[in-house]
Image (cartoon, rainbow, N blue to C red; front, side, top):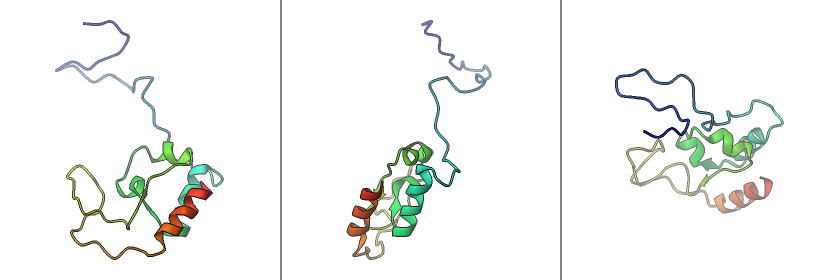
Length: 111
């Protein structure tokens, strides 16, 4: 067994306490002036959907605090239905917003 300083769980043994030093995810910021809040507000104002929100991504704070996000085009519904994904699915999603391309462009310029 390697001695690389990492703590690994062993079968039948209790899990190690805490997270490894390299494992961290920034929580979404509650500060009203944070970049996270700015991204969230611009998405709400423009009525855009993101994979981040729809898929309930645990890394949303890290991305949005950095001023990035993944906009879902053609609404909040996916037609694929992957079993591992939390995005709403439907074989016949609602009609897309004809102004979505313009709203997406506006969001990108704001971020």
